[in-house]
Image (cartoon, one colour):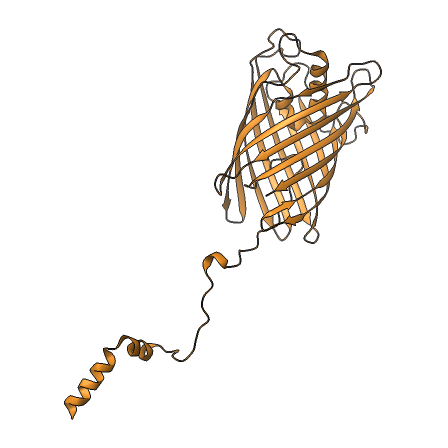
Length: 319
C-alpha cells in the first residue's frame, strides 16, 4: 500500500501541467493577455516651444518657412528702409539622434526714394544636428557650413543684389553668414534645453569662422577672415495644449571686429504660437513674432534705428 501511494505521488509530480498548477499560487485566476510592446501606449512627450531665433533641439523630419518684413534706417542718411526675407529649412531624421539639414534664403530690399532696390539668393547652409537626452535636459550639437554661391558676390557683383544682402543682414543678424556671399563660413554650436510642465528654457552658444573665397577686389569683402560669436536664451510656456507664448534674446559679437560692421548686436523676438497635431506624429506649429533690434546693449533706443523692427511669420511643419 505504501509503495502504491509513493507511485501515485511520483506520477502526479512528473506531470508538467499538474506540477505547474500545484506550484502556481494563483491557480484558477485567468490573467488577461499582455499587450504587445508595439501596441503599448507611448509615454507622453513634454511639449516643446520652438524658439524664434535659436536652433531647435528636436530631431525629426520637418520643413520650416520663416518670412520677415523689417523696417530700419539706412544710416547715415536716416531714411526708412525695408527688407523682406524668406528662409526655408528642411531636416531629415536619419537616426533618433542625428538629422542633416539644409537652409535656403531669399531676400529683397525696398530702398527709399531713388535708391537701389534689389533681391538676392543668399548662401545656403548645409549641416547636421546631434541631440540626446541627459536626464531632464536635452543637449543638441550643431555643425554646418555655408556654400558661397549667393548672388551679389564676386569682384564685379550685381549692385542691386549686393545692396539687398547688406540690408538683409541688418534685418536678420542671426543669419549673417548667409548674407556674406563672398565668404565660406564654418558654424559650430550647442544648445541645452529643459522642457517640463509646459515650460521651455533653452540656452545656445555659437561660433562662426568665415574665410573669403571670392570677391577679393570687392569693396564689400575687405577681410580675409571673420570670426563671429553669439549666445542666446529662449523661454516659452504652453497655455493649454494648442497655444504657447515664447520670447528669446540673441546677442552677437564680432571677435575679429571687421570693417564697417557693428561690434555687437542684441535682438529680441517674441510672440504666440499655435500647435495642431496631424496624424500620429506630425504637426503644424505656426507663429507670429515681433522682432526688435537694439543699439548695442541699449534698450531705450528709438523704435526705428539702424537695427530692425520687424514682424516674422514662422510656419514649421513636422511629419
